[in-house]
Length: 250
Picture 1: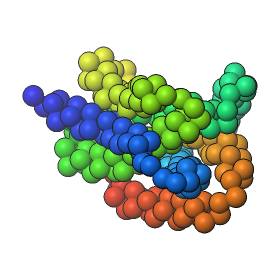
Picture 2 (picture 1 turned 60 degrees about the vertical axis):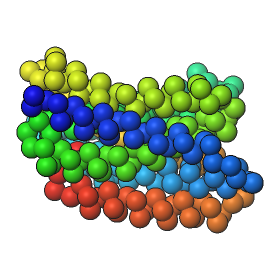
Picture 3 (picture 1 turned 30 degrees about the horizontal axis):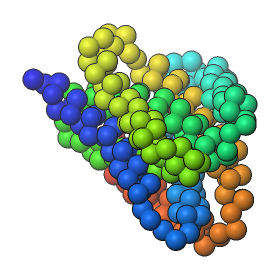
């Protein structure tokens, strides 16, 4: 069955998000060290994924379809819609702890991100399994960090582990679900243009989350050492992801 391997790759890529959940079991003397490190790492990864991968590739497809002027206007409007959505979500849960809010917004952002990502893995693997495998490895690397960005803020924000696992799992399963739906129903309707709109919206969500939520949370911790370490590891991981994904579609 030609679709088996692409579906398996999307499942592996999605479930790798749960590896990030394992970090809730790490016992450390000072939990602020882990929070500072993981938040700064997540912030750098989210910004780099948005600026290096999602926005350039998706914007190019929109520009090709609508031209320079209308294309840039559409990209800007869709991006701002994603950016401002974080404020709407934040207002709905304004009475909750800041770490909890970061975890919930991360969950929503990455749920929306993983669904079209699963479609991309399936379509790429369906056409060329070698390209699909390369993309899958790249996605696994950043999905682990994404799992951390959901589970750690929720756990340290007071959410029970069972609930943290459930939300992290929902985010992870969105990827193979996207692949399965693309195989069953969306092959004739799903276009690169529609995926591009979705990913520009998601990049707006993730950059807004990074700047307005994660960065503001980091300022509360007087822990420059672990914040800088997280950023350094985030930059290294982003460069590795770029090298692995070089020359492949996202």
